[in-house]
Length: 347
Ligand code: FAD
Image (cartoon, rainbow, N blue to C red; front, top):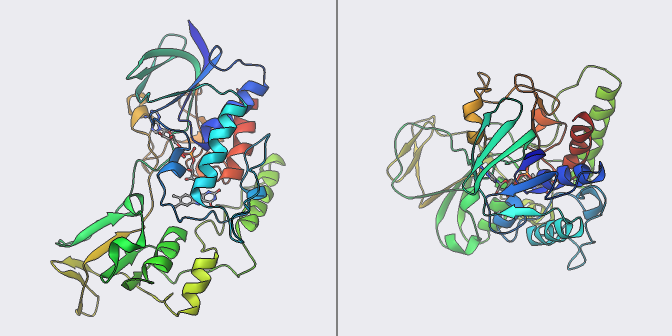
């Protein structure tokens, strides 16, 4: 039997796609399935550190159909656990029938369909929608030399208390770096390194501004106008309460990168060295596309060229949620919904 669609990944992008597939009349579990390698719902949100806050209020962090319930526990924005609860209830509410603990190893071309190979067997589908996110591919830039202390990536960070009393180097200029710096600097001596001066959004600007920028881009594309570029500001730092408080403590000073790692720390461009017990790399993620390698679709930049969400070389394949290259703000909660709507319309 050939399914209409197989969605790989049951995070927010996979769920938003499931919502629109279902709304188009397809029956979850019969006409399409969502496969997810993880045992629990929530996608990457289930793996983030517990004190992480979203950078927008709940009404601007919602998937299609059902708003994220208000966050009432304190005056800040929701914690990651609130997003996990929401995604868990979302897939139940729409009975999306996510098949968990099913990892897809590869997708291959059949005669008239695509074949999805997982550790639970094979499925044939007219369309495959890849929504595997980036969390499983943390990125750490290469530096010459080596460091004998502890190193971890954002993906492995859990709590500030683990670094109490240490000298900690935090590398990266985005929201993860700023939020981790804010809390680690309460218990450790921190140094912050960014490629260029960090860009802080004004206090009153939050994820809503990103949504509005994404909306303008979307409307421009609908009108056939030239795309003005990426979601300006997605890498800009939102001044959530912990980051504002760190600013008040005067710890938000970043210096430019070191030139090499040394045994006990790093060497700076002027030849001086600084010692650290730990380096935390908040240096981002790369799209998890290994399961698509057999299709031979990657361009020179390592990404798969798309028209919207559709692979140019393999039109039966769509990609959603990895970044702006798969739809404006498609890697955000609110942007995933709009991208999924256009994707399903296009099938
Ligand atoms: P994921 O949530 O990563 O889901 C992918 C799913 O695919 C996972 O469940 C995984 O198990 C599964 N999978 C992967 N590979 C396979 C495979 N081979 N076979 C089967 N299943 C597989 N966005 C906002 O809107 N607001 C925010 O405040 C915000 N803060 C963020 C803070 C941090 C630190 C980070 C990293 C991101 C943040 N984002 C935020 C961005 C965005 O919402 C997340 O990156 C989001 O989790 C991406 O959703 P996704 O569904 O594309 O991928």
